[in-house]
Length: 243
Image (tube, rainbow, N blue to C red; front, side, top):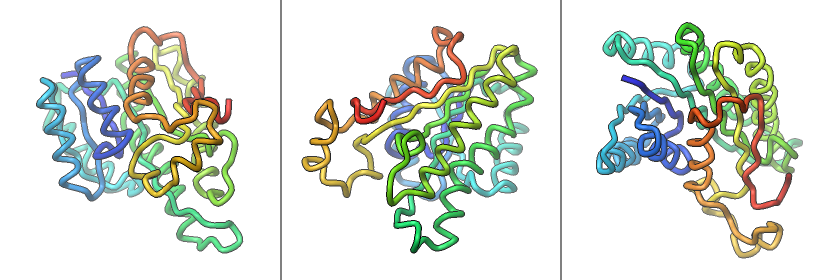
């Protein structure tokens, strides 16, 4: 059984990516989520309705022991399953001006985006290397590429992930493993639902927010064999707001 794991898969970009990888590439999807059982079940149901299959894996990617424990248990129960695709999508925001930022708001954002990348990818990386095939796709952000005021923590976490993407890509390329990052701008998700879209789209050359499905199409391409010579890249998908 060939599998793809998507972290933060219950809603938004994670859900759209999970649906697309199942539909386009036929992968069994490991749907990671932290707390929203109803949304995770809904994602699972949508995949099954489209003829795909998936497994729910509830764990906090920022918790190293919990991540290892859940993934180890799943691997033992499915000895023939091979994870080929890792989509590190889990992320949180704790926005605020840096001068008033509590230490926990700094740390928690780094722990999920950056720590989550380490905990999940590190668990699977030796298996990918042995199999001599893999696709690691990190969902970063325009904030990690250009920096966004009021998001010093989020910008730092995503910029660190950009650096990790470029470095890891060089370490594993000879084993037919690619490592890329996708940097969305303003996408219609729960994370942006409180934004004034009419006001903000004036700043975006494309004059609209993006759709989660558009990000998912890009991830699906990077996960496919068509993208086997693309690695270490940060692909912006932001309607021209920053490129």
